[in-house]
Length: 336
Image (cartoon, rainbow, N blue to C red; front, side, top):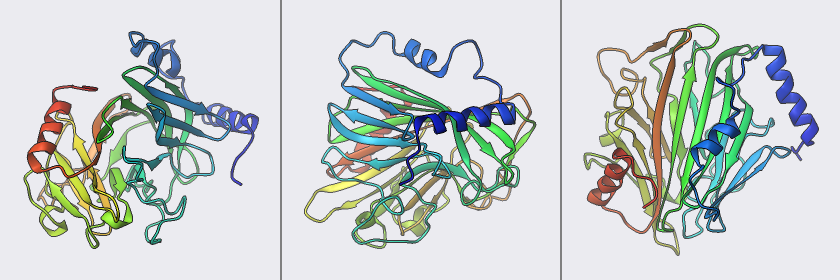
């Protein structure tokens, strides 16, 4: 019911660019040209296939013909996000509600949309709960060993005045079904003045695990130091966090979220037994409990890039196996 015509979506995106006076993506190349250049050496085979549908506001990602995930950026959604997210077994590993139905249906926190990126105190505005993040440009490419989605998003205030440009990139790899992974990076560009990330618990890279795998049901939170359970791992700065557990009639399934070593600091982890994992680089006091705040000011004209990897797996993975996967990411390894 929320679908619009392609013309309306195009006019809407054009209006945002014209009315808000947004500068074009830096350089003479479009997002598509940048992506195509990045993937120029890939062979013709499309093991990682992306299908961009501007009319319906989505990019569907297939791994060897199987639906892996969809980047949802339609104007009816307040922010863009990935949903659904499938393990190689065919199990959807993030919560479907409120976009679809879960069994059992858990209806708390309607702003928890599968796998998303948002923050609770950005120049005093709350994109975690309230303010929009608008996709104004998006492109996608396919390839033999990897495919990608790159979007230009605009974070706005409560009157839709622009606050910051965000360039978001997902890289999806041709990986074994038992261990699928993709990388996400966001680059914030202070194009409209200084921007401040406040010391706030709500953010930044986040997912809501499948209901059966919640910590208050069958699942378990575990961090890179081998500590387990919400009370043990909440807030502790660490390179990665894992959420996993059994699914009825199926095997163990889980999602591990890795923070790249090049990020400017270790993240604090806002995690909950009701299924939330949020990788937060700014809540050093609010979440990590440190004496000094983690507030970060990005000066006008400057950029900040943050990168993570999501590991989607089927079958049990112990601490050493998860650490091995993190080490692969830290060394810059993609598809094996």
